[in-house]
Image (cartoon, rainbow, N blue to C red; front, side, top):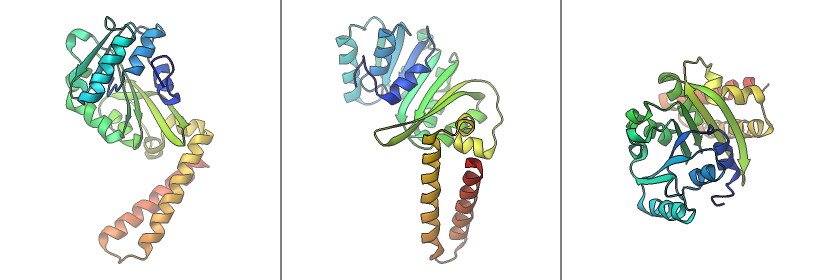
Length: 231
């Protein structure tokens, strides 16, 4: 992977960045995503934010190597603290982290989102918590994608300002992903059901404490919820 050829996962993230957007890529690593988008003439300006010094220095070198120092500002900062009002950022990408970490980044510096109209988020796990955050904070799901790369399954959530109502199954599985029921989606949740069933079998042998009973009930509920959704 490089600034001209992204991974399948990051290429999918890039596809949801609007033409002409002013981008902030948080956790940018080598800044491949913003460099790629400038090279493709999708955007002309971006901020690449990194909280860790090593990846920050890699991003600085990459932007310099690509000849894009006039287009991409690289900042060493904690999450959205990399975004300044004068940047006029309207689109934020956060990819390659767990859902809870992405939510914590979005919550830590809410003022940075004041002028943002689109979030493109790619959680490695626990996409559900992002959907829950969106419902509670005035964001609606514009699009969702699920894909497999190198044996791993990734979800991409595209949010825009707005109100939305989702069922419990839609929060867990994704409304649009559930409607499409792609092969990757079916495979992911079939494996999840099998995993829950294994956990359920192991706790059946445990002492019947209130905590065990609560966990058993939760697993039964999740299995039935997803089975019913997959039909």
